[in-house]
Image (cartoon, rainbow, N blue to C red; front, top):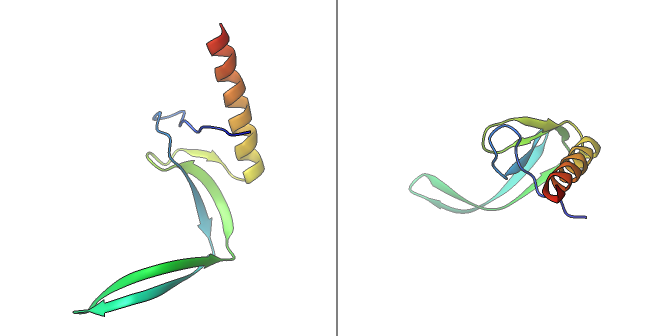
Length: 84
């Protein structure tokens, strides 16, 4: 099933995952006049801290399971409202 995220605080639709203890490796493609241009980036390890609205920072959930549960409940609630 596909879910659409809508922030309950600001109404925006961008969701982001916030992680800690992440190792990030970035390819440097060009060094020109002291400026670096980056290519591909890889992330490894890390711990999910939370899922939040990318617009306002409203915390939505703290685990993937909690996120899916919240989205299921909200989609059911919206479906019931639309049926009425």
